[in-house]
Length: 479
Ligand code: COA
Image (tube, rainbow, N blue to C red; front, side):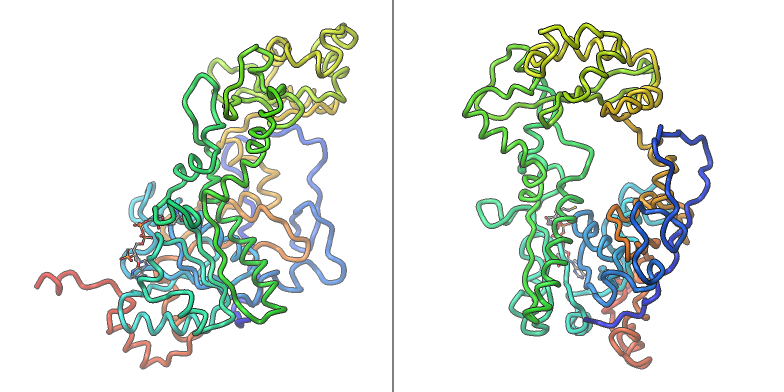
């Protein structure tokens, strides 16, 4: 594997005090202190060495990151968090298009970009310039993994076909995100919501009476990036045995379908009768030929619904998700003040309750409307009744336990200042996450040319004047 210069994990940006009010979750267990860096990730201390001293999990893996927008960058950011040296190749003068999209601070890289490209290095290379291709060739020889999510055919048009890359570096793993796998749509460009629709998620999301809905969670982009990261790590593992790289392909349609697999389960169950846990069953509405939208019904066998809490009239997030889990039915009846439901044959068994779920949740809601979602959470948790507050993004941004575990991290950026990002949601007991700010466009170009690729100072000067790493001079072009 390639040697990395960045051997020592830098300390993560410390969790800072929030500027404003902190909403406290009714956490039953205090946040534990653990691990060598003084932070808790909820895992035991590693056996012998202090946390992180054994190096990061993917230390020594070098990634040629040809990704843009969201799906690919999600994948490579995770690899970087795990310790890989991720070198992001961007078009000179332009960079990843998201640098300028949804800009909130004039002149600074957008949050869209900064939150998906942390802990990477940026080099600008024009892949359509002969000298640029020479630099890319050197990168291909020195990297372990190439990740890309261009439109179908774009990498081949650059001359970087699988055959060419494999011949140049037989150990190279070439990982791609595409919208669709081989088939009628393989040549199509795809964005998040297209994948949510084509992967079966949208047709099963929303309310029965309304149109299909996409979800706020980016299951098409970030979800597929996650799948790709697993494919890459798996290929790296197999390479230990074979010595050979391989192609890894994740289609966004496939990734979404994988996340929506319970709905394909339900599609097959439909052939054997109605889906009794869907509230439309209790309401006497017949099922059609395909899995319907289920509103806020629980996806599993324990009926659940979203109920109002105190303040719902003015606060759009004053709600609680409540699950009428069968093993705690007696506790639910006692807490909401319906003790007779414990023995009443219309309510005492899960089967008897199914046609009455609407009425049961209305009763639960009448109770939860007398308290805030946090008070309700505290009360129900005392009785082991599963429920969860609907947290707004404001509340998540201010939630201290997420800062303490490094799931939400505050970073400092030279042009935009402080910003929040999502750190590594995957915690490893022997490998702390390395969460650093995103690079400026081309920030590491010279460093990579000289220190990674071994170009001399004179060669770097030549490259600079060649136009391979700089944006075309528009004034010259116009003249
Ligand atoms: N130097 C020179 N040219 C470069 C370059 C560089 N460093 N980096 C990219 N380019 C060129 C590519 O070669 C391509 O040129 P070509 O079409 O002439 O061959 C061009 O930039 C644009 O690439 P493309 O991927 O087609 O961008 P797009 O903006 O038209 O499409 C997507 C964007 C996301 C729709 C498309 O990339 C796609 O479908 N990707 C796969 C699915 C995916 O990941 N979607 C989710 C995005 S979050």
